[in-house]
Image 1 (cartoon, rainbow, N blue to C red):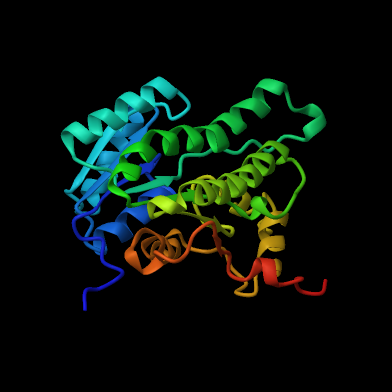
Image 2 (image 1 turned 90 degrees about the vertical axis):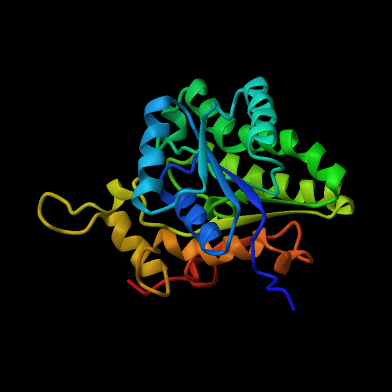
Length: 266
């Protein structure tokens, strides 16, 4: 029996996968036998940093492009280029994202809109661009990187929570609309991951004490720690492989148990 978790012969486009979560998902895909990793970043400098990260990891089957995922025409052109230079896109991982930690009453509309555009509108744009070819082949996998904020609210992240909550519902609707074409769309909801994006929250304070949010997360997570980016690899491989053909419209929370746990008593 063929290994249902194998990605042999598959091409995967992971947006914003120069480092962090996307990069670690790419590494897991390579270990699962993926044919080609395609990633994009916002400018040439960021793209080159990403290519250097892949080279340092010993990954050669990778191709990078400069593309702004909020530019609909640019994304369509990129998809055509990938089809011409790499081949069909079997797996799309909508990973690119930003967060702005600003109290809502102080946040400018343009700041709110930027988060919505990158974290919600861009996954719509990218999925819309790859769907026609997936429909024609009657096969495809779309993975949206959601968040704890797809389920929970928190101070200062109104735009991020709005976007990630919307992304959860976009995931369900893609499942509803395209499941008949044997296209599976699922999400991964990472818990609090030790990435460059969360580094400021894990830095020691001037007096040597832990950041209050660092202490809060460790108390709220049954494992008592931040999660490693590598721990998202296995779930991503599952959702990208034939093993998940009957799983659709689901958000898999890789959160160390946060959503199940009320937290330690103070």
